[in-house]
Length: 112
Length: 116
Image (cartoon, rainbow over the protein chains, first blue to last red):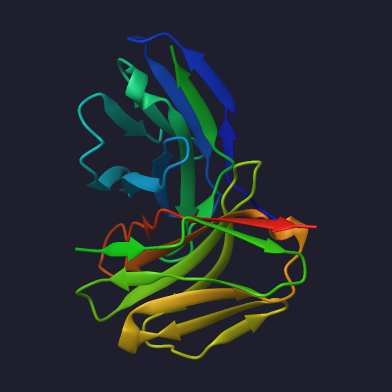
């Protein structure tokens, strides 16, 4: 069964460094999302992406964040200058329509 | 604005007990979707069910059942004869059916512990 994949599974970085989290959505899906979950808290929407552009973003998704679909398969989330509070699990999701979102296994980001 | 409330932070039961997880939602839209996801200790999000606002039929899938009541804006989840493997955090989520992203808005989750 097709699934969303994410790499790396765990990323450790120093505060102020740039990180890129990678996702490979399911191949025939059209809508892509990033969510984050701070440890022990709820899952929060960051950004959605459709037709090669951002369709919606949350207040969390400030100028430090960007997303890209550099080729036909990858979907990346970049954090330009990480802060301690960026430490969280980041989930990528995709959907062929706008209902059932399939989530990847997540990338745990630790900012030291 | 959309909001999902899961008032039960943690529930602990003994194996074979039935358990109901509550979910109350708020939305101004007449068309929306409700979801339940399971997050086991390994951390991934596992899709359990999606319900649209026009379908109030209850659903049963094995030991799982869902009760959707628009009158009380609730979408509760019952596990019958719970098992240790059901131990996880369960999230209820809402998606409004607008053209565009239809992001999911999650509740805070209910941590279910099933003891042997």
